Length: 426
Image (cartoon, rainbow, N blue to C red; front, side, top):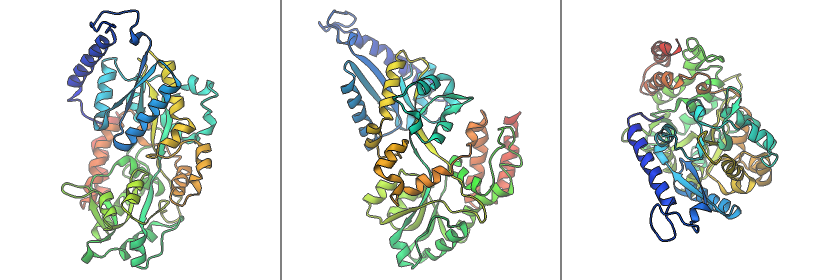
């Protein structure tokens, strides 16, 4: 995801950190560095490094989980390393220096899988994990060439949030599962009041093409062929173009407003301010909407007329570094992290175990049910899992989508993206 420019610097820093850590571990009881003694605590304590991209409340919960694991495993110290926005650069540096964390959050398996330990034998042979208790489709997102490289820890699908107060004020009925994009657009027009700077929907100035796949699949389109070899006729198909053009058209007719661009508020902030009636996202902003006092509802994604709704999953998984010297301990930590107890501690994503969902009745709660409905419809394979050069292709696709929300025709922009990307398929 990030650039190569910081790789050398980060590698150096990681290497120096490793040397410092080694020096610290050799500190004896007399306080002299490099003088081991029989009472050296480092000989008794194993340090397990765990890398996360989370910050804030989510990070605090992960630190609490680490402490619970330590309490159950005397002699173990879990070192939680919060990489935040620098996650990919630091992971690349760690792998490059053969000094990665033992356990890490992971999603980009095509990029990193060669540096990860295959987990098939761990997962299939460990009854404590109870693999059958997970939503089975989640394992597909962590599998490359038949090898499992991550254990699902959390996920979200995407839904439409709506502000009930704005719907009531405009006398517009709340959306219901089974609605269509025609229903969506009609509601957005009725919910728009330029005199109040209020709009029916917010469109991101910079859309993540991964997230847009759900829209594209729902219209019968795709970015790439199922075998991952062809984009012409897929990325620029009429179905794909029409799905993306929908957002450009809503901006043109004034029923939607552009969000998150340079000098613009994020869509979440505008929604919390009561100035957009509908917003499309995953689970992440739900708690902040509640805290802002928004009377919020959720509903499954709309359908294109006569076509089944398709969803896309954003998944966080836990992986073990191939270079880890503590793979068995790392596996024990992963098992605890995805245990019922730890899953119920984490609220920033959705439970991956059926038993937890049943216990908490998440799939019966009107706010959470649409996420699980969309999970049942998320059986398409994302493009990045189909072609090793997808990151290069995606740059052209991202530019095309950005052009559409700024007024270009989707068909023209996607034709150009295909033309500019063909070289990566040779």
